[in-house]
Length: 297
Ligand code: URA
Image (cartoon, rainbow, N blue to C red; front, side, top):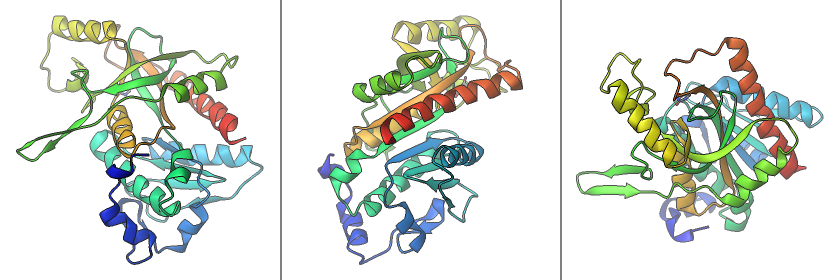
């Protein structure tokens, strides 16, 4: 862990019980007893929609002999479930939403593990989601090697008028390889590559089917071919920030797995049927659960 990057000025008093930390968007505070039940957390699984979180928690509970599922009362922003060592949390759509969820969960984990950096570093984090594929067939689960923005540079945020905060978008290779190993022989088509996180679904993903069109067929294809040549295998909306924030604190046990639902070299619209989309999501869930079982026993 990178102790120097942890906000001790704020968080140490929380661990010392001198002040509660309010995880506002999750609707819970470090003073609420429900969090006592989360202390054994060994994995944090994040996904965009709340419905996925509810499904994942039920499936995990089923696989773990009907282990109890705990929920937080507030669900208007993010949906949370805790079951047998795994904290499942939704993050909404796009980096501005997901960045709030990730920061509040980092703070929550610091509290849950009493500021013990070794205990924190053992926790496995993952984001799972859907994505647009770059020259991979729809239904492929892409495991990300690096998260970048649409210009293939890392995640950054404005530092007021003064400059830019930069983050490291690298994903740990050993974790990525472990995910592939957990899924060996499963028949799930998997690929590894860089992932572009667009700030929106349309313009920063060079789509021509938005209400607003800024590109031509030629400039769109030039961008897609450029990112393909640079090793990008899929496009989504959160993965550069996810890696960037976790790297900032020095976590080294995290990954992102996203199933592709369209091949962007062939089109912009999502034409897969609902049955196909369901089977892609099911596949992604299996890839995730194969790995969770491998690491959590
Ligand atoms: N999610 C995205 O962000 N882009 C896609 O093309 C598909 C899913």
